[in-house]
Length: 365
Ligand SMILES: Cc1cc2ncn([C@H]3O[C@H](COP(=O)(O)O)[C@@H](O)[C@H]3O)c2cc1C
Ligand SMILES: O=C(O)c1cccnc1
Image 1 (cartoon, rainbow, N blue to C red):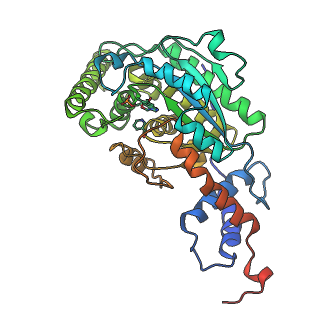
Image 2: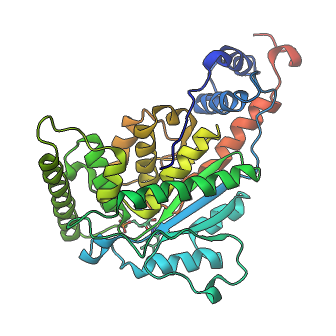
Image 3: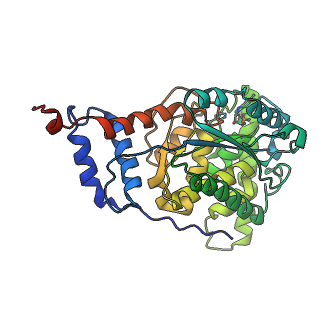
């Protein structure tokens, strides 16, 4: 089993960072959320130096898109069948998806990981592609309305896989990790995880995903509820009083997805390496919620790019006390919200590094 050690940020650098920001030639607080963003990045980058950084840096921002398939998809809870997961992976490799466009305009490195789609790519399809990684756990998860989505061994394997690729990127010089996902029906899995972790009624956690019909939404709600009942009944039987809460690992095994588990591993490994992680929409935020419930200080290293149109995302963000940077009614995933938010991080870094202070510019107010 993989263990993570995540240190809380040493807050003793905060006054100096705040002072630097406050002394820039602008009214106090006038750069709003960009100021807290600069301070968070500065605080993270000050940790290994044990002094406040002179300049904040952003090196090789990289999006890892984890792909996986879901047994629950066969019930028709998405606008698309599972085969679309694989088709979209090929689209990513060909450069034709939304995430490819947003990575190109923002100079983001994009890497695609097969965490467990139903049918592996062939060697011909992969060709000479250096940005595709096979970290398959299995050919899609089980239907979690009937049985656990995966075993605890698979959960641990997924955490290790996700951690390993994140660490690899960090060792190669990336100091901002960004996460995205692709997996038909993964909003069902994310909603079920959320319901179990937050002990919230499943109707509140289930939303429209890719834009399903009202009949499909009803079915999705029933199926997620059925899964929650299955899991809570099983757990109650296994634990005669007092009923202990399921561990995050058990929740992942019961209703998770291979791409979600690997994202949790990637988040935890980045936090352990004191590297910030830019979180995308609903599904990646659920992975963040799991990571934080495993290791609470993980939260210090997370930046939330946007609030998705998926209704339950708001609740997750509130639970994590997160203030998303954008609210564009996106509901795509793939890491698109994270890619779109990167220029705001660049802006925060540039004002922190390059803006004159009142003293240096001779401005007196
Ligand atoms: C063509 C297409 C491209 C996508 N890119 C991301 N998603 C998004 O939709 C899926 C989750 O929504 P649901 O739970 O309703 O299936 C995930 O694959 C997510 O990344 C897509 C979905 C489709 C159909
Ligand atoms: O917010 C997201 O990440 C999302 C919402 C709907 C479908 N896919 C992704």
